[in-house]
Figure 1: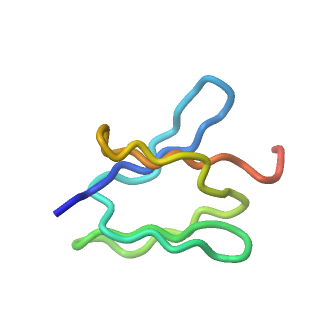
Figure 2: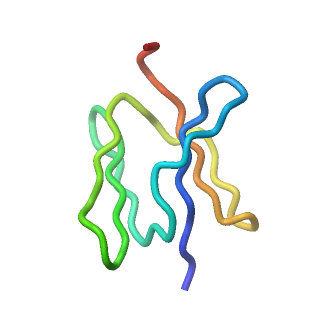
Length: 66
C-alpha cells in the first residue's frame, strides 16, 4: 500500500497538508485529501504540480495568489 504526504509549495517553502494520505481527488476549485482515520480535508485554490512516487510526496501549487 502506498501512502503519501501532501504538501503545498509556497515559493521555496513546503507546507504540510496531511500525512499518510490514502486518497486524493481533484475538484473544480481545489483538491480533497483523506486518510484512513481522519476526516477528508479540502484544500482550496490548488492543483497538483508534481508527484514524487519514490519519495512518497504529492506537491500542490496555488492557483490563486494570496
